[in-house]
Amino acid sequence: MKLIFLGPPGAGKGTMAKRLAAARGIVHISTGDLFREAIANKTELGLEVKAIIEKGGLVPDSLTVRLATGRLAAPDCGKGFILDGFPRTSAQAEALEKFTAVDAAVNFELSEAEVVRRLSGRRLCPSCGATFHVDFMPPKTPDVCDVCGKALVIRKDDQIEAIRNRLAVYTRETEPLISFYGERGLLKNVNAAPAPDEVFAAVRKIL
Ligand code: AMP
Image (tube, rainbow, N blue to C red; front, side, top):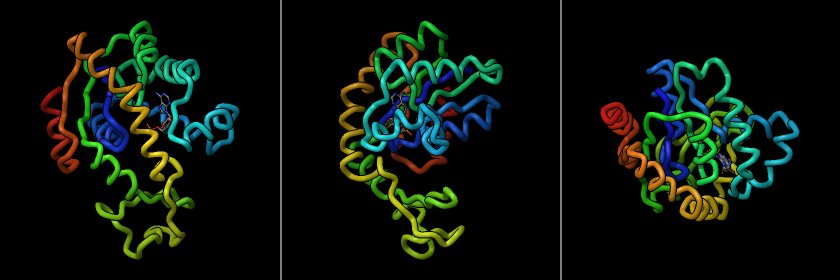
């Protein structure tokens, strides 16, 4: 099965994509993860996109399409895939459509207030990569990693200005894709507000 996961940042696309990919034995492709990996490894791509991502902007379409289609061409995608965070613009959606057909675009719906609450509460351990949330998954000691004891940080793109920017970019560039996939009869809407197990059950039902 070939799927696209759409929705604002913080809607839980990554969490749902990981679970569904594991359940169906298909590949989870997150362009955000691929970019973060490139940044961590200080590759040429990483150096090129670091500042854009930290401000919450969009990486140029040409770079992103090349990265995503390159990954989709790998043999492990033959059985199916979930694209999480790609496409994010009409140009990317058109490029993807030329490259491969998809079976459905699942749109995770979440209010702006809830997006801000979810993203601004995220905390990351810069040392071991463990993630927490001040409301939903607080560490035992505030701002300290349960796993390795290091001080937790807020990802640069989870700082309030970057969140506002990501939301504005989402509304302007990505939201139009809801009609793009709706017109093609591929759109499936899911309410992303409930707890993860409930959202996951809804995704499985809809597919
Ligand atoms: P994510 O983890 O999906 O929220 O992605 C993190 C950041 O990576 C985004 O805020 C963008 O800066 C960049 N990014 C990820 N996917 C794309 C895409 N399809 N097009 C452009 N930029 C992207």
